[in-house]
Length: 335
Image 1: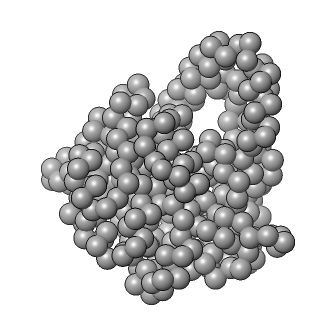
Image 2 (image 1 turned 135 degrees about the vertical axis):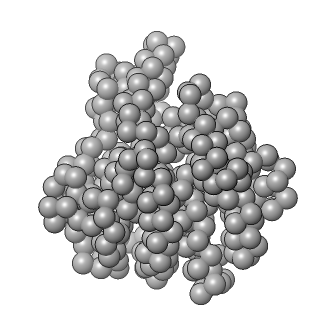
C-alpha cells in the first residue's frame, strides 16, 4: 500500500474531492441527500463489520490497537463502527470525518459470526494490502462497502502486516502464511446457510493471498465454490505475472468471475516490481496479457491524479462503480 503518511494523504484527497463536489453540486444537495437515503449501504444503516484476522490480539482484542502485527491463530469478531458525520455542512462533507471503531466483540466460532435473519445475505470480504494496521484495514473495508452501496454483510480479513514502509518482506511472507486462514474463512461462509454469495475485493499483496486461498479451496470443493463465490475484484494486484497466470489455470470457472483493476502509472507496483528483480506485477500489466487469460480487465491508468495511484479503488468514484457493477453481476468497464 502506501507509506505511514498514507492516512493523512487519503484524508487530504477526500477533503479536496469532497470540497470540490460540495461546490459543484451546491443547489442539488437536497436531491442528492434523497437519492443517498434510497441507495444506502447496509453498513451505513447498521454500522457493524464482521472481522476475521490472524493477527495476535492486543488488550484481548477489546481496545485499541485491537490486533497487532504478530502472527496468531484465526480470531473472529464483530466490530461496531461509528460512521462519518452526515449532512450537507458536516465535517464529512469536507473530508474531515471518517469511519472509526467503537468496540470489538469476539465471537466463539465462525458459524456464530452472522446474526440469524429470515433471509440469506451476501457477504463482501475485503483483503487488504501492504503496510496496513488492523484499524486502517477495517476502516478501508467500511469505506469500500459504503462507497459501492453494498446491501449485504461486510467483512475484513486482516492478515499480520507490520504497517511499516520498509517491512515489505515480512508483509509478503505473512500474506502467504495467511492463505490457510483465509481458506478457513471461505469454507466457514460457504457452510453457513445464512450466507448467499461471497464477494471478494483484494488489494495489492492481498490479491496474492486471495488467489492462493481461492486456488486451495477450489481444489477441495470444486463446483460448490463456483456456485457460492460471486465477484472477485483484484485492485492493483501485487502478484508476479507468471505466478498469477499459473494460478488462473488452476481455478477453472472461478477465473471468469475475476475483474482486475490495473494502472500502468501505479508507482507502488513499479517499486514492487523492482524489488522482485524486474518481474512485472499483474496490476501494472497491459490489458491484452490479462484478457488472454479470460479475465475482465479495467484499465485505471487515466483515473486519479495522485503521485502513487495505488488506492484508486477507494479514492476514485469511477473505480468504485466498476466494483459495484461487478458485485451486482453487471458488465464492468469505465463508468
